[in-house]
Image (cartoon, rainbow, N blue to C red; front, side, top):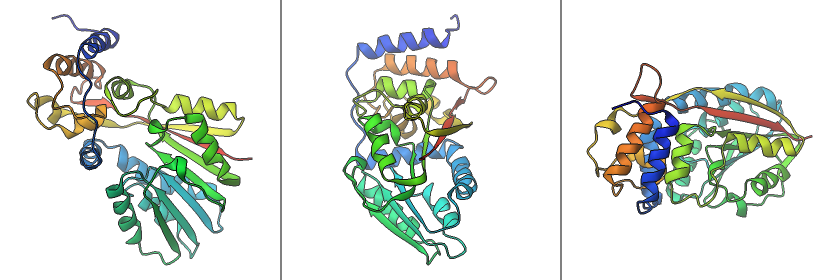
Length: 284
């Protein structure tokens, strides 16, 4: 069989998907379960856990801080950042907004367990669009959560309005590269254009903000997924495409695997690129 280029394999995948029924949504419980499996297959989270507490504190100054995290999940990424900020008796008010109640409870427990008397943690189990605050924040961050916002421009404006002058808006979002293409194609729960790093950067540039970006390279190991029988429970694949895949047709799965093989790292067919762009904007 001749080797297909990524564009050709993606075209064939699109054709297979067009002739198949939509996949079921991820439920709140299965979302959290599949997310944990997905993160375990990637080395990206560990890099974020190191990068955020190393890079952000110097940008925020030495005074008391108010932080708002949007889509914080179980707090795995937020906890190291909160611990780094709440040092030398600096008072930190840390609010985590998370739509999945189970994950929100995990965030509250994880940050509540930190040994930092000067850290105050508030958990909001709900949508960011519904959240209002009268107290300006020093930092509002979105780590892998911008994709799901219905209106990207409105979300950014809502976040920017919460920041004090000089405050930071941070978005850690994947670029529109092979994995995001799959999610946009197969996920039934996005319901709109999947906002990727390029969209965030463009929107912020339109607002004439001081912006800098950095790309963090990572890889997602799909070895176990490739050997799983068709129709079995595959949490990594589920989170990758944003849907329950047990009902995926054999044709779609075959084309999907072919596409993933084409975009895998050279010399390492089990791993596909899993980069993330970190964009930082400062409010005038």
